[in-house]
Amino acid sequence: MKIILLDGYGLNKDLNWDLLNQLGDCTFYDRTPVDDKNEILKRIDDAEIVITHKTPLNDDVISRAPNLNYIGIMGTGYDVVDINSAHKNNVVVTNIPTYASDAVAQFTFSLLLEVTGQVGLHNRLVHDNKWSKVPDFTFWDKPLFEVKGKTLGLIGYGHIAQKVAKLGHAFSMNVIFYNHRLKNVSEKWIKQVSLDELLRQSDVISLHVIQTPETINLINKTTIAKMKSNVILLNTARGKLINEVDMANALNNNRVYALATDVVQKEPINRENPLLKAKNCYITPHIAWAPFETRERLLDITINNLKKYLAKDPINVIE
Image (cartoon, rainbow, N blue to C red; front, side, top):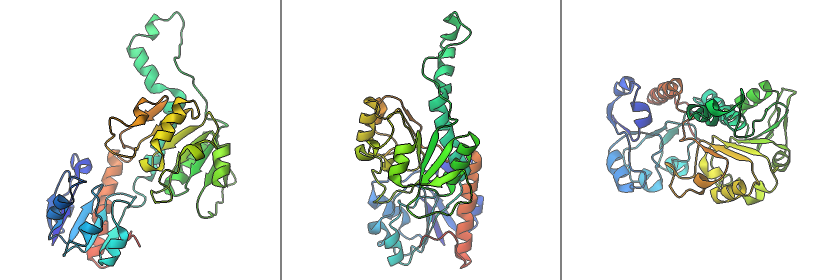
C-alpha cells in the first residue's frame, strides 16, 4: 500500500514518523506546490492513501487519481479538500477535529493580552534603552487596558470557542456568543445572541468559525459599521473570514481599535497585503496550532485515523 504525505514540513522538523512507515510504503514531501495541479497529480498518481495539511485536493485531482481511497487531513478545517468530489469518487476523508483546541484558545488570549498589555512593545523599548533614559520608575508608550468587565463576543461556539469563553470568564469578562445553530449551555455566565447584537455589544470579538462560502468576508465594511469604534478583533480561525481591504481601512480610520490575527487570506502573507501597513494591526505567522505538544498530538491522531480506516472502523470521517 502506497502512502503519500504531501506537506509534512511543519511536523517533520522535530517529530518521528516511524509509526506511519510501519503502515505502508511511505513517501514524505516537506512541501508540494499548492498551485501546481500537475505536480500534485504526479506525486499521488498511484497512491491509495494521501495525507495533506495545506496542499489542496480539488475535483480535478481527486477524480484523476485512480487508486485513491483515503485522504487524511492533518488539521481541523477541511476546505483544502473537495468533499463532494471525494464522496462522488468513494474516497474516505478524515480530519482531526479537536487536537489544537487548548493551544489555539491559549494563543487567542495571548493575542488579546498583547493588544491590551503591550508586552512585546515595552520589552523592545527596554532593550532599546528607553527605560534607562526616563526620570521616573515607569513609562509606557501605548495605552494599556484591563480586560475585566469588557464584553467578549465569540463568533462560533465550537471546541475552541468554548475554551476561549472559559478563559474570558476567568478574566472576569462578560461572555456572549453567536452560533448559526442554537446551543444548549448550562453556564449562567454566558449568553447566546444574534450576530447583530454581538457586533453591537462586544468590546472584543473573536472569530471561531470554519471557512465556508457563507463565512468568507464575514467581517467587512457592513459588519464593521455595526461594531463599537474601540473594538478589538481577534482571528485564529481562517484569514478569508476578514475582508482585508475593509479591515485595513477601518484600522487606519480608527473605526476598529486593533486587529490581532494569526491568519491572513493568502499564506504566506503577500508583501502587498494592506494589513501590513495598517495601524494597530498585530500579525503572527499561523502558529496558534504549533506548540510541540499540539503537533505531537496531531501526528498521533493522524496515524490513529489511518489505522482505524485500515481496520475498517473509520473515525473522524467528514460526511
